[in-house]
Length: 331
Image (cartoon, rainbow, N blue to C red; front, top):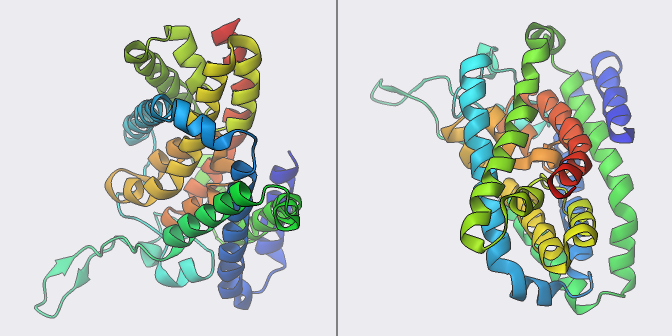
């Protein structure tokens, strides 16, 4: 709720108070905050007790419980939104100027359509390729450095500082995101146009994840209910690991923790590909419950303003569903 409130305040500020000249600085500050947040997350993961042993013991099974539910939810959301919503075209991303400012152009805005045809020297027209810049590379480097720091020096002062700073950095990032979204015009009307239809995204995420969990359970020797429980974390690895471990044992709890952790990390690096080949709404499905916070910067960079708001709403709904789904699967 605090994240939602901060983002709404940022949206109001971006709409009524923040001058246009702040737009380029907004994007740069978002990049800095995102890298700090990922580094903090990596340090927290690496400093966890038994992290390396857990990866060695359950890594393969966790990967299966990550890939199949994620793929099922992405495909289902893509099919649903392609039929029921005005989904952004594949390859539609923020323009170069908007990306630099942390802003994203609505897909319906011709001036902000990065997929608009452009003419080459011979006069032919073609759609520009999706700009894969250094954001994903920086995220991977910061994550690796954070994990390495957590493993090597779990009790160091730097790890403690990074852990303590994660929440305020997230608040700043969400405020900046809100400002970027608030600087768009016509976004509220676009959301009002779709109203309840936007619920197909979290519905597709939940159903696709549960179906994927059931499918993943079969070759790994787990029951269907155990597989659905492992996948019902929807990327919220801390809650899923602790809750499932207390209800179903150490092995399934550890697998659920790693699987949902892998889903959060995987979403950082597959969102650009999904945005290019499927649509912006399918990107939301990859992040699932994390689409409201940690994976939101990637949504901002590779989708449009409407997808960013839908991403926030999806994350709130999916996060609320996680404890309910786990209880239903293991109850």
